[in-house]
Length: 479
Image (cartoon, rainbow, N blue to C red; front, side, top):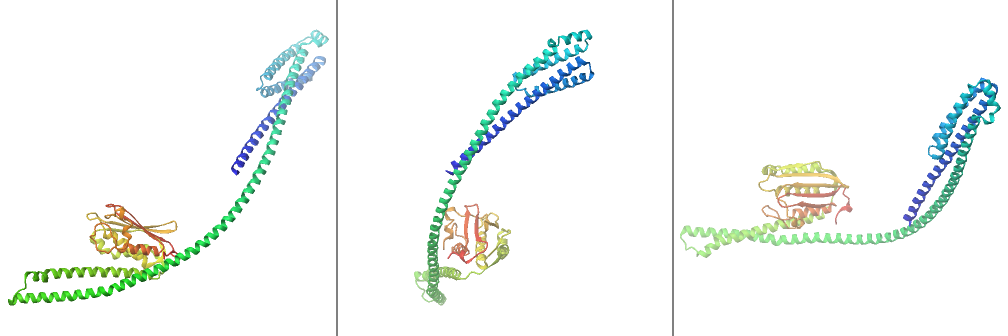
């Protein structure tokens, strides 16, 4: 409705503008007609003065009348030139102006002839002055002037009528526009009032929904915190309880190894002293099967010990209180790079640390995340390709983005999320590790109010993007 109303207002404004322009055009035509009449009257007046001066000259012979006539003739021609320009758009009036110019030329020639008359010819002309050619020319001029004046008066009446009609139409348009403005204003006020009522109602509903949502969020947050705490306690208890039997297994494995060595020594002594050697199966079990089995047990227990230590470390990190402080990420990343210089030089890798932003966050957690990302980039280089690792950063939309880019072996897109799972790895397993580092890094990033994402393709390198708030607050922690 408002759109229709404003469109109508625009149309009314355009119509009013057009009518105003038309009124100005009509006023211009009226003024033009008045100018034509004024010039025509000026020419007629000059013509009459010219005839009066001619008659005075003929009656008295006074040269003053000759000067007066010459001045009137010049004035008449000047007026006629102006009149010719004014009626250039009217063919009929233009023809009459040409007729006046011709009559004025004939009149001037006749006057010059009379100036050469002798006394007898002049007296004869005065006796028959009513039939003088000059008088006839003046009468002809009066007739043409009257015709032109009548036409101009007719045009003036027509144009004044048109002007009045246009003015009346303009007044009507103004009244209509005013009424339209009033209608649109009333409609606008009604619509605004209705929208305000709807807006107040919506705000009230939104307030109630927000209150309910805040209550639900608080409840869910409390549940998540409690569940997270329980998970951390469970991980600590499980890993702690697993360590006890693992220590026993490792201890008894050491005793088995000691016993095996004693039996092996006894067997060697029997060979030296010429005792009866055990059968081949017993010898094979003592010398090969038993050492291999003990080796497998030791390797498995050591791996299990590393896994338990990692779980304990994750549990401790989850319970550790964060201590935010101002961090120079450039200095932190450079320090990590310096600590890996031996490995960097050994592999011939180019490790570049660019200008990184400063943030407020927990130093230990940020160092662990960056250290893990840079170490992984250095660990999974492409054999036969000189390694290049770039650490860059910037501020974008109020968050710090740190990217660790390498030209290593890359990660299959199917494994982009899998590598962040606990104890899960991707690609060829030719490097030491338990599949904990990236899971730990992402968990720390969540606690710091951030995220870690990866963009990678096989044989094309990888880019790990760490996003952190520029200033960490307790509410940013992913509890």
